[in-house]
Image (cartoon, rainbow, N blue to C red; front, side):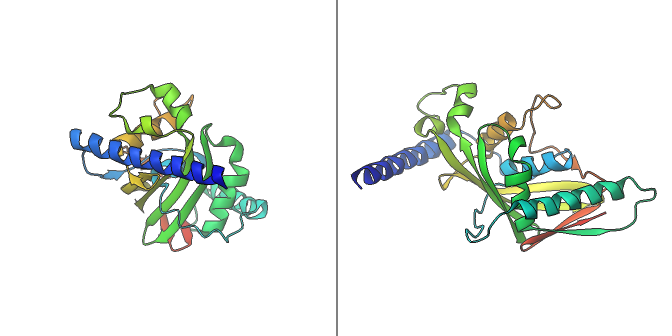
Length: 239
């Protein structure tokens, strides 16, 4: 019991220090307001990118049970979407994807493809285009690459796995996508978009894209998808 109290107190102190450091940093940095953002990737990578760019709201009910079965269901739907895209001409089709299917797919089917340093992703489909999610980030892994930036750096006050959350609005039309970031937080402390971009860049790098994803860049929807409609608890993919 004494250990639990000590650990909790230590975590609270670190979160408080992080909050104060973030506030000081924001005072000294002229941050641009969040604006519309977009990305260009294949379907699975779009989902992975969304984890970092959306990761927010973390309001996913703990009672929802993820399963391999639900993940496989979405995998079959993705195969059908790709099959439809290969047809000439592409026949109009709408494919519903539930929040449970999306999260099961992330945690079972894509588990081995999630970048090192990220864990336990969750996405929330909130309706009216609003998306949220949460992912645990290994800050030590990130800091080994980034290096220390002095006492004014908020990340100097946290370590280990921390929850990164964010929220935004997805707008899609005519095969184009756009994500507008509303907020991002670590340990429930708001962080600037500039810091979020650093994290996104680091964890989204690949051989095909060594510079990582720029959350301000536009993206084309894959597989001849015309629109993705985000409703509460469900997204509808329209080809």
